[in-house]
Image 1: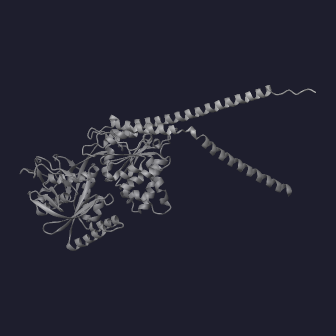
Image 2: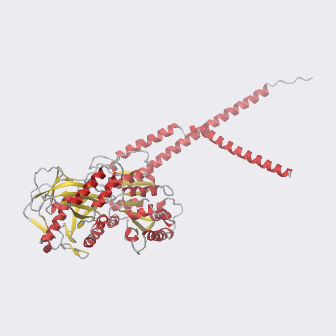
Image 3: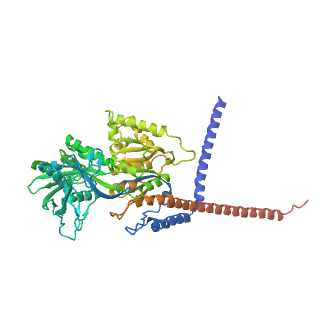
Length: 618
């Protein structure tokens, strides 16, 4: 019994000794870290920061980054990202103004189910719709003429366009007109085109399109909007309220009052936000045209209107005034009032605007993918329009199998959206991840495992279900499954995106396994959030109508492939050089100290032995 207790005491003493030894080793390690901190000298920090600072000037002076249109080069806001450019794995880009020229041209419109082209080639036929399928005989009737003029008035009134001052007081039109698809327009343009300024080029394109068919917006003076009709008569409308556009509502409206005292609401916006607010029978007449135009790559907008009675306008005005004076949750209250006013509208028609692809956009996308970068397109446009652009710039090949996760696919099968979403995610994960070929050995970058046979498409509504799922067992894996699928696809298209959703996508990839370096490119206010969220953000400044957004992509390719890699090598060289130099100095100092100590000990021993007194013999 005594021996057993003795053994326990010995074991406890040994454990205490071991703990003390480990604690001593840890404190010694920290002490030596303090003692040898001079191995990383202050001069290294100064030299590396100076190298980065001077390197940013070389990027600014580089002729490849010089834009002759604005006579300026690239603007480097921070020098800490030079070396990270060579390690970019994911590129997030906007579509409008970056992949496309952001130079809008009015192509055609659809009024009351009939299509009207704005081109001279009237001999072709598309999907059973002739280019001249406008019923000329119907337009000669009073009802048809009123519908047509109402649509053109809506284009002239529902916007925030400002008119530039022209050199001539009036724009003269010739008596000769050309009737294309039932719409009359001048054969010759005015001597000097009227200039327009707007925050969105779509609005300018629509106003110019209406002007080509006889309705000209003259300007806004003292809350009075003036337009000139086909008979050259000036019409005045009192602007009562503007329900501003925002990326969540995806529409804007104006409330105007005519000279006769009639109050009208004109609304234009995306089909997904307009169709639920009009009568279903009106949607069926226009939906086919909208989908066909989107498939051809055109930007589509739907136009609707509503007559407001005196009581309806009084209620709407009081609610708007109350919401605008609210001190808390003002935006939410305004949105709620907008949604109440913009109901029960009548659908007039739809427009198609062309935004041409940038020059060499396809070659640039291939260069990005060839450099090992994954390209994600984040846009607020309609899915068919964005998909057509991705095919045109070769992000999607004709042999690419597209994995679509949109509201349309979720509604198939007649089941709940959450159940359908869970089923599709598991199916896509099996096809793109589990059945994908194994990664090449020795390759660690995430793009190396990409399956080149699949492309992924998701819209904003479905993305909200993925990122903000309901609290159940199945939804907990939505985000991880979605990320794994996207990482194993050659390209990803996110359409109908809100600005905050763009930032959420970038944040999700940035915080994923491996912490890949991300880069965002954009040219508008909707892209600011994702530019700030990424490791590297590139934006276009000094915007002009002729400034090519493709320069941003070219800058990305050149910087990421050449300049970024060079700066990464330079910084690595300086770090290794300083560490090696300081370690060498420390070794030399230690050797010198050891030599001095050895010499001192040797001399001490020799002197001690030489002068040691001899013992006297007795």
